[in-house]
Length: 396
Image 1 (cartoon, one colour):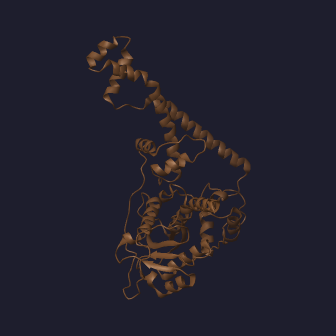
Image 2: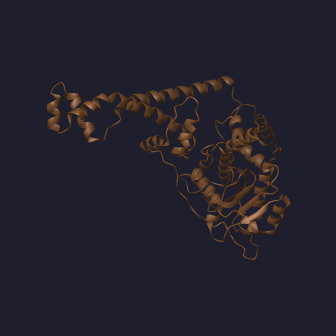
Image 3: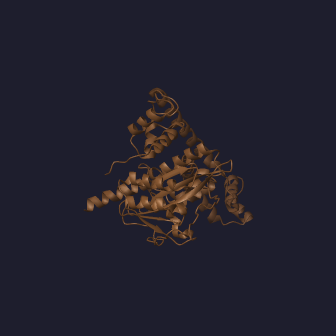
């Protein structure tokens, strides 16, 4: 496997992500970035604001005893939350009028005959007895829903509200000690807990077409898939709104096989160097891009002579969809929408350029190493690639 190389800007962004992630360990950040823990530690020593960092938290070196104390505290809180939910389950209100009648009959059945009560309330006596007989089953189901709801809320909070029912279901079912759960049940419990994802969007034109430049043939034709990794890529530029009215910009290179983000670049401009940097990062991650197809829109940065020269140097074949048709690059558009929805959430803008760079860098590095993708069957793109590669090797 080719040795990965990283730009100095990527290393500095990685260090900034580590130093601004309160409570995150060195190993956790290294996993998110898809790099070795020692590599990240060396970057911190070279580029970090605190050159004596040796512990497992970004703010200071924490003793092992303090880590154990913190873990015990977190476990105690989780046990307490589960006990509270267990005790509160029997107080969940019933909105069904028939169920309320059954409960009334059950409460006063020693005062009045059940038959008479059912006659007065105009309910079927056999239905009451069936309800009473199945009470333990309903109670157990209610308790089970409460416990499952606590797990769902924990995952939802950990992912900052970005996971829907299917991704949360995949996360739950990946736990070796858990009982398999259906995504419809997860969706029902999420609705009862009022846990909903983010769907807000805002659009700014980032594609400036230059009709004088040559147009490349469409080699993808909306078939955003590939038989193997490193064969077909898509890319785009999207704006990142700042509170002061300015914008930052993100250029991406996404593998159609696994939806893995193999190259990206963040800057306060949309010059050709932005997309060149993203493509060069992809080359450093894959080792070589020779023979690969890169599909984009007709933006002037992609039709520029400088970008064409970069593609030729790397052995990349350019591909472009029709002018003014976003569907011809829908995979990249979908990525952009997911990023803004999950990073900005309820906010319309980033506080400043520094916060923007840090948060977008964090999300992009986790996209391929931690975030479950529906295209991959709710498996992380990096894991999807490695699993399929192992299968191919075993077959051959």
